[in-house]
Length: 84
Image (cartoon, rainbow, N blue to C red; front, top):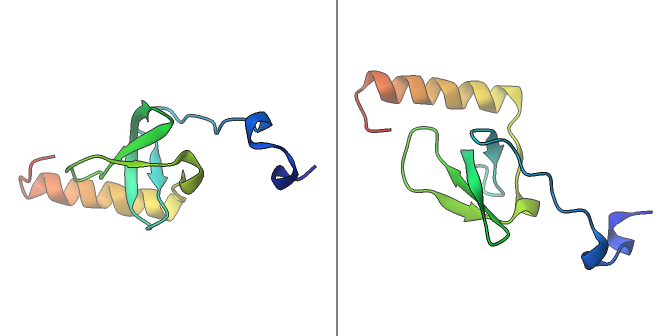
């Protein structure tokens, strides 16, 4: 049975990732999963900054390449002494 034919109230909620899991939102921004609040997920860029919220349906786990780029960006920011 396809997900579209199942009423919204019967759908399984999206699996909540572990804190720190790298996720990609609909705008292709990579962020660390920071938590859940009122049905929305909070993400934060790996280089620091303000958290943003997204609907769980609008995010996906980061690919290995996206994770590598994010980790490199974090290392570069740290080496420049930027606040994380």
